[in-house]
Structures are given as structure tokens and as C-alpha cells.
Length: 372
Image (cartoon, rainbow, N blue to C red; front, side):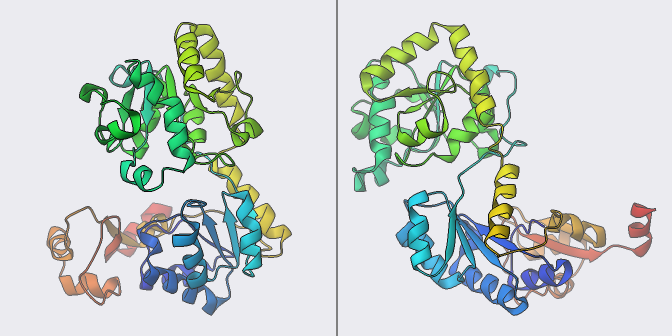
């Protein structure tokens, strides 16, 4: 079951109704506030269900986020995208294993190039100028200086999708022309750029692990140009699956070569997609279950169910959008505010975007007709 946004009430409701064998929490989202960490831990502890945390913010936020979360949430097992951190978590008394990023096939898939996003070279990423200013030693800075700065300085156009690229002149050494910058692009739209640009530049954050975008770009049929790191070479074959560079000169030479050799670029595009065929989130879930079973965390495995789909069987529901209030929602569906609060076990009328709210129970006839 995939929960969606959680509340103190629906955590207990979901557990009582589905009796899961395992609960997995991951990343750094609004669902990982300190308050919700406590709710999740308390709810799982009461029913003795194993709690697993997938630390996808490692290693950049291990100290300021992952470790405090582990101490608060007390998971039974931790998966991390950083292999070297497994020993640290084990030393804290938490069983741990490495589990890399992946891509979601329903979101990141190849399509025919779209004119709107067609270009020679593209970057889809936020710039993080303040972070690079405060942490000039991070590998992302080196990756940027190797892959992006030499092209901008030579006047070679790169089309940027993401925040704050207009603030990067200090790091690049030259102002990026404003008509090269396209601003924020929703995560679910990125595959359109990956499928349409001739070359996608993908920065790496660490030498010892791969970014999530590495998998997403290749899964979308993008031709990836990235930093030449041990992690990249450990997973892929440069020149076959993707393009790598270890210097500004090499970046310039390879961009020039591959932009002028369409057939070579096409081969890399095909091979890159093949290289990640076993790196979808379905494959990661299978790996997770395999490890947890071997380590004695779980025994039986059931099917995946979305909580929202189950709610739809019994209730009319509403997905909260930004700016909505509970009163406006009640008026929209012509029910009282008190009715909605009681049905959802709300103690106040405070709601948030993305939350799933039950409006009213469906008539029994409607439910029966759905199945018969």
C-alpha cells in the first residue's frame, strides 16, 4: 500500500485496515517533520510492524537530517544510497544496507523529440548558488567547472531548466544569456527534455555514488554527458552507455565530436537505455525485500495497494490543492465543516496541499454496482 500524505489519524487507520508486514519511509519531504516521525514510530511500535527508512539524502545531509531522523524514528532497518555509510549506521545499532537510486518507468520514459524542448545541449537541475558558495569543496562544484563552465565561456549554448541559473555568474565566470534559461520545470516533465535534447549534461554530487538524475536521464533515452568518476565507471561503460569527461578540454572536444556524429550519439542513446533496464524502482523494491528477508526483518510479502484507491471504494474523496481551505471544500461539496472534520478525525481545520480528504460515504448501492 502506498500511503500518500499522512496524518496521526490515517496512519492508525491504514495499519488497522491493511495489517502490513512492512512500513517503508524514504527521503526528505513534508511527511518527515519531527512530529510525523514520532507518529510513524509510535504507530508501528504499537503493532510490532518493522519500519524501514531509505536514506536518499545521504551523504550531503547525513549529519543534519538522516541521523537525527534515525534517532527520532528508530527504524528497524536503514537503506542508504551511500555504501560507506552502512558501517556507521550499523555502529549505531541499526541494521543497514546499500540501495541505489533508480527511475520510475511511468514517469521517465522515452518519447519522440518535442520541438519545444529540442536543443543541442540541455541541463535540467537547480543551480544551488548559495550552497556552492558555502561549500566550495563539494564535488558538485568540480563537476560544474568541468562540464558546464568551459562551454559557457566558449559561447556554446546550453539550455537550462531549473532554478537560479541566472545567479551563477560567479561560479561560471560569465553571465549565462537570459534566453538560454527557461526556469523551473516540473519533475514529471523532465523526461520531455531528456528525450528531445541531443546531449544532456548531468552533474554528479559525489565521486563514490550516482545521482538520481543519472538513472532518470538514461531511462528517458537521453544521451548523458557526466563526470568521469569511479561510481560512473563502476556501473556504466563510457563511450558505450554514456559520455564522460574529466577536464574542461575533454568536455569541449567530446561535445563537438558527438554533436557532429549523429550515428555515434544514437548508439549511446540506445545502449544507455539498455544499461538501466534493471534499475527501475520495481527492481529496487525487489532488492529491498530480498535483503530484508535475508536479514530477518520480514517473512511474507503481499501485493502493493494504494491507500487512495481503497478510500475511493467507500468514500467520495478530495485532493487538497494549494490555497484551499477546509471550509471552501465543505461548501464545494455541500456538506458541513463539522461533518468533514468528524469523518476525517480532524481536531482542527488546518489542512495542507496534497492531503486526501474523505467527503462522505458512498451509498451502498454505488459500492455494490462497482463490483457486480
